[in-house]
Image 1 (cartoon, one colour):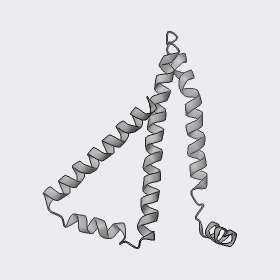
Image 2: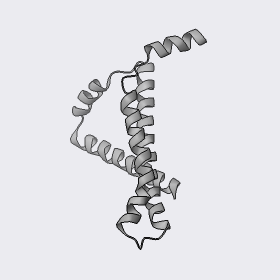
Image 3: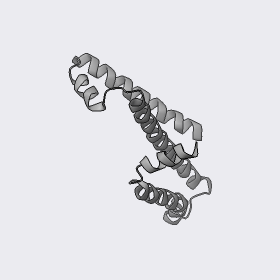
Image 4: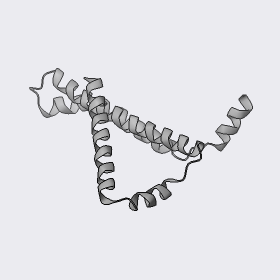
Length: 124
């Protein structure tokens, strides 16, 4: 078991670690300063007002995180199951009729919108 884990870690690509760490630092700094900036802009701001903006910010972060996680899992399982690559899917998508492409776009938009609303509802 440990040998397999070591081999997997050797194969892993850690090229994005600095970018992910930088994005995490930006997120943490912006989370901590969001309320202070709002209070410094308007001195009559009540205490719940900055909290509401932080909740909206948290819902956007959760939504983005879920999208990234879903994309990574889709990519992992797609290659693991041995399906064709995404470039072939795009070429096949372009051969669909216009009404089929529009139907796919509308369905994707509806699912994307519902996922965003669900993340906002989960925070509130």
